[in-house]
View 1 (tube, rainbow, N blue to C red):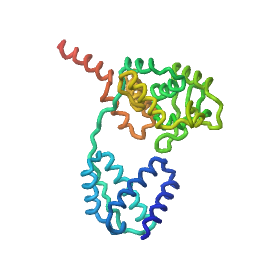
View 2 (cartoon, rainbow, N blue to C red):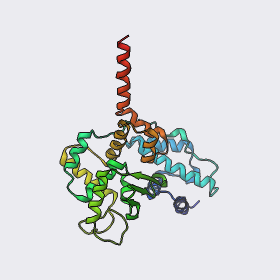
View 3 (tube, rainbow, N blue to C red):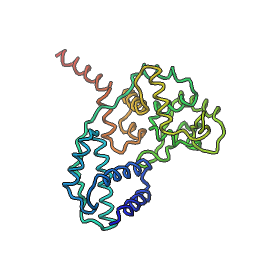
View 4 (cartoon, one colour):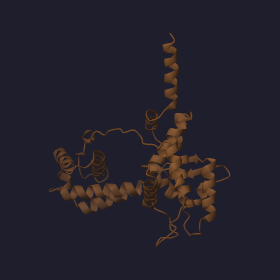
Length: 289
């Protein structure tokens, strides 16, 4: 088997399936590292070789999630070889080989912390970006991909054309988010790109801002305010605030674009004031008996 041809064909296969660019890149990097490690033809790999590779990754002290991501790429490649090219009879990467992962609780900001962070955000563009995360629960990639025609100011809603997993959804924005968007859109320089948020300085001025560009901005404000925060913390904060305000869990699931309700239920373990209120109300009744 020509491994180079198979890898190229696999990459094309992923693109035909409309996999996200990040997914394709991660899969190909995983396969590159695996092929370099191998000392035998790819079609001769057995379960024992996969287990030995897992041991190798563990010796490098990679995180369990990183190792599982590597295994996902290799498993996907062998599924392709088995089903599309008919080059192997079975997949040597068994599902049971994945490492067990912890389920850390989502990190979020307290209300006063969120207010403190925004005191340091003087940039009109940056304020609009981070308000979309805090009030609408957008992922950083979704903010980067936002286009001008996705914003409906009259209806107070935003169309996410392609969220995680290539799923679209509609989200709504609050008055303070509306104000931040309008302020930015009035100031936004005309540009050929339809992306909403643009680079404002340097070589790439006028181009669409990147994921890393936004992450650097939140890192800057985190350092300046002394409050540990990331883009995803803002999204988690929105979910927690809605939950505590009495919003239905299914509603929060739709707004966040979660495929499974179990993902959204994790926020119940963080700061569910309804549970707290129910507990003290019930305990008062118990103590009065």
